[in-house]
Length: 279
Image 1: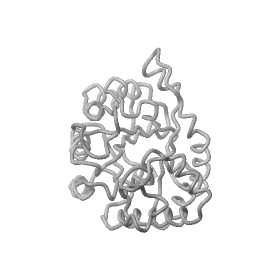
Image 2 (image 1 turned 135 degrees about the horizontal axis):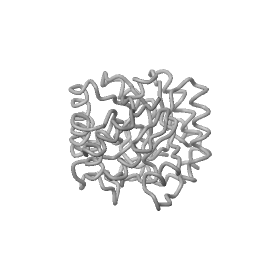
Image 3 (image 1 turned 90 degrees about the vertical axis):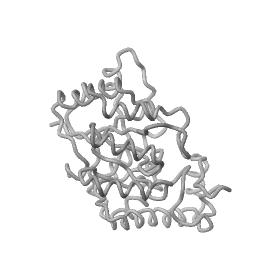
Image 4 (image 1 turned 45 degrees about the horizontal axis):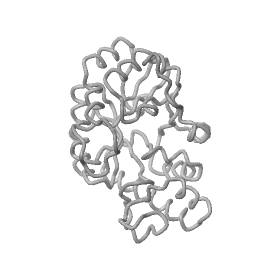
């Protein structure tokens, strides 16, 4: 049985992102979105989600390179001079390992983001993290422990089989995500032990920011059995604060509403929904 969750990350980052999420859900194959609770357009995202009860919404935890939920003064080890959570993931990960104060601040910030999501009143479909930072073992432990108290039932495990990518785009040799692969495997084990639903595979890693209509259709044509998450970063246009350099946001929006991708889902015979539809 083929089960498919098509997710948009960074819901709430900007009006351009929110517009694309709404359009792709109403007109295309998008079934879920991951909310950044303290991003500039989060309130607009929540309002749209309330108007779209069939859109499954989850929490996109921010622990690197974006807006914290707690005041910056309460997170001296985690934020930069501009009050944003630091972007130096390697050094930040090391600080979490060696500084008890950083770990305490991390726990407080994760809790605050879960609280902010709870305050929206939206059902919690899933949890993941900006730049997949939840694969860090220390962060994973805190997300699993804290999320349990907020009804977390599903979490993304970023593992992508290269064979599917080569089948979808013959002649390509996509780079594997070797830097996170061991930690993703560990996260899968810990998530299953916690009784959480995880995808069998997550598509969109190698081509993050470049999920064109042709690539998405190709991936759907070679969709395996089991639970697949296909995640994207759609927007109607770029040029907003917090955008990732080089991301083809509008092309990813187009991929979610293109006739060929809609037809590919039907040909695949996949059942689409959010994680909560498959738990």
